[in-house]
Length: 250
Image (cartoon, rainbow, N blue to C red; front, side, top):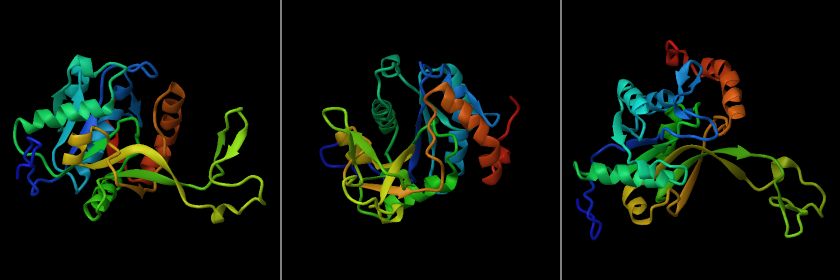
């Protein structure tokens, strides 16, 4: 099926594919995507979770880095060689996703939707991916993304730098936490997106959006402190999740 005016052919029988952007450079944590958590490189953790997800088909890693590409292929994923002009600090994940989809479209039809996964979330499990993908498939939304419920009192700042209640009114008696309106924290781990709307708009947040709560910590590795924290959490979370099979030799 060729989408009218899009130039892309969509095959609704194809399973969703997984796209994992993983560039070689990172100022916050040099070589971040190859760093190990629980004796497993971050990239390998994402590829293995995607490969074990029942809802997904092919897994592709978009990278400018040969070491990352080689690891992706050893783990059973395809390596999409990303141009260097899409791998700098100013390049967005969306640019990498667009490049990957456009490249794959030259080889054949695209699936109706795809999953965008981030290596910086090391505790993503296959069932998390399946939950987000299947919720999108069963909905009228254009994209779905992983969130975790947030039960705290959120504050912002006004123009003078003074505190302003975001999900509560501090001038009124303090509400019980369970009486607050539901809010969710984006985990940054999993995004399931319908292909044609994404290609048309170039943003992961194609409306209408669907937050999908998952039972995982919203931990993203952007600093050395984040990496250290995840390394401390890994023995507990990997064991609790039955992920000891993740371990490989350093």
